Length: 281
Image (cartoon, rainbow, N blue to C red; front, side, top):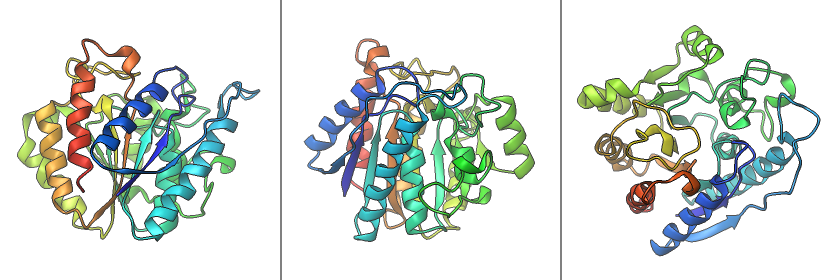
């Protein structure tokens, strides 16, 4: 197991995820993992495109993340991509798709991250990449780094509870699988059965874990907190199930830890437990 560090903040358009990435890297190092590569983050300005600010910088980062993930998987290694904001998953998931286009993606996040530039209210790219990975939106953003597209049936959203209008349209129109946070908190057994059923369809699984899947009372140190998140106990039950079959899970993202927004180091204590768990896959 190796890890890639991508201390990017451009996708969130606010500082702090970069600090979180470096803190997470320290924690993984303590667990004995060796860094595969630290992705250089270019010093860029927002640019002329107001719909996709910092795209040039994010594109450079994602291209490098993609190649690092692809190289690790092709060498038979498992890999963890550490963000930074969630836009680094554009690169990591494409790296996985380049290696195996039949991968299943379990996306643990408060948000869908499947907006497109024309419909996004914030224009923050960490809320858009999943749409482009699925092949929706402008052609210049689709199929970057590899021509392999992530099929809608290969996605399972876990814990999503704050969706923009376009995201709701997209998810409903294409029947994308989703287990909302309230279902997880009220029926963990049913949620685990649904996750297990999804996993059984794939020989390879990618996990993308955003800290904001947790309720902000538990993990306030994230850039876009949303009330009604899952409990820490529920998250670990989900992770226990997913990681039990560690021959299937070959790649993980851990993103959106922002220490600048933490309160009394609550989130730091939470991420320490998560790092211990996922570093053993």
